[in-house]
Amino acid sequence: MSACPHTMREYPSMTAPSTSPTLSACPGRSTAPALRPAGLDAGLLLLRIAVGAIMAAHGAQKLFGWFGGGGIDGTAQFFTSVGYPAGETMATVAALTETFGGLALILGLLTPLAAAAVTGTMLNALAVKWDGGFFAPEGVEYELLLVAAAAALALTGPGRLAADRALPPLREHRTTHGVGALALAVVTAGVVLLLRA
Image (cartoon, rainbow, N blue to C red; front, top):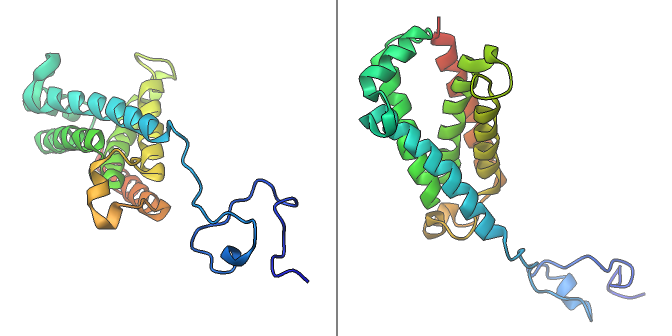
């Protein structure tokens, strides 16, 4: 009986992992790691830049009053009007979260946490606009898309064109990092929403 339980003819689409000691002994079986699709890292970079730039711009509106934003004072008034306590504090937290979460996504730096920050912020935005229907500008389709994109980045990781590649704990993205970060985002968003009158 052959030492290799399955031949390439039986499973032509399987590729053996390079770390498997038993499969490397099988004649004719490739031990090279699976190739990444050529556009994967570029696609993740494009998604990070788009989501990160949108969020950083919204954060700059709140933090500095740029791009026609209301700054901290105007944002605080809005937060108070929709039922959040301590409007100025909430405005500052939202502004910093959006600005630095967006910039971190662009860089691919601490990506699970950056994506979670965006997710948590946009979950609150979804709750505020929920009664406006689905379609923008009054509806939630824009916020829902940002939540989905940020959550996807938390789960997939930033790709190889990212600052996380220089950080040993995050060099190889693990799904558990993303799941944990998203759980933190949901819990934090839930606590903030409970404070809303």
